[in-house]
Image: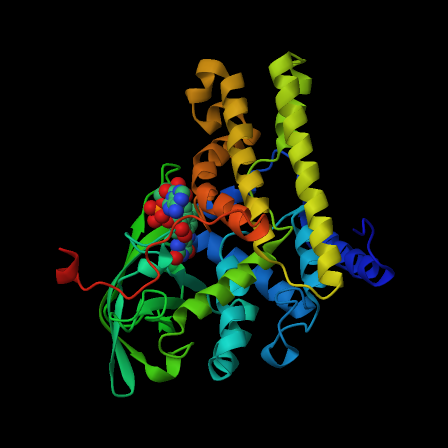
Length: 403
Ligand SMILES: Cc1cc2nc3c(=O)[nH]c(=O)nc-3n(C[C@H](O)[C@H](O)[C@H](O)COP(=O)(O)OP(=O)(O)OC[C@H]3O[C@@H](n4cnc5c(N)ncnc54)[C@H](O)[C@@H]3O)c2cc1C
């Protein structure tokens, strides 16, 4: 494992750091970074768009994307170095990550004609994207999804419902996974499309979270027309498309989940001279976990330098950091005793981040694969332990056969 950058990597990191320090403010450990998501759309979207355009002009918006599509044509390692550096700054967060991290790379690798149209404006921040995968009965078991797309000549008619679609209420386009062959085995009957979120028949209903924000949505499809030219995968190859999206999601190595940093809790404990055994043990645990995550990132960078691509082992990052954010927030709220029930304004700036981390921590342990699913992935695909029994790989049963 290499613990130091090569000279080229160090030069790239120094240039990224210099540009970031000239254009953004350094993050402090108590910052409410995720609070940016809570701003009203009218304030949040223009700020996010301006930051995105600035990054695009400097070649930091889509580092790995081909120059022909508006990207920087850089390496995965440069992408990760930039993410690591950007995580140290207070920058707009929560608008473009899904599009640039998952939707557009998926389209670029599977549908070159669509990529020509959609990738360049997406990189410049002119269009926002969402991911329409999960449904009320298909989250961890995504391949069970039921939204139907039926072919009629040169187009498809879509009916069904998606849920938990982050940013659907301000998105221009989405990648949609729909069932196109209800008789095929469940992983084989899916197809991926690009959908215009303003198309007739689409309604978006925001869901209010316990934090009070409205970040994700239910999306209903009522006889929505999608041209066949907007199909991303071959009919029936949607599952392979979804795995491609997952592969790009894994490139989020070094990305920050935007919630409270454990150092804020350590600082608070130090200021309060709280050196009881429980506090000391907690701070030590967080330190060890964060060192583990950092060393793991070095290991990934080393593997990438050797031409490998990130695999299922990347599941460990979110598994550790999301639970840790929740634990840190709980620790700080407990430290306030009954005052912990009071709202953020009462306690000052850092406490907004604490409250948000407490509310968001639970969601982050579910988004992008719940803790249990990630543990299964690590157990089966990294440690090669025996797999869970699976009874759902064969042909789908029609409803009347199930009764
Ligand atoms: C903040 C947030 C943002 C999201 N954004 C998007 C988005 O933009 N687009 C999108 O498509 N989806 C999005 N999602 C949905 C997310 O992908 C799903 O919530 C997730 O896959 C879990 O699915 P589920 O909610 O249906 O829970 P379920 O699959 O019903 O799981 C419920 C619980 O059971 C556990 N469980 C399930 N199966 C097993 C098993 N085999 N073994 C052990 N335990 C199991 C799970 O880990 C979980 O704890 C988002 C979710 C959140 C919280």
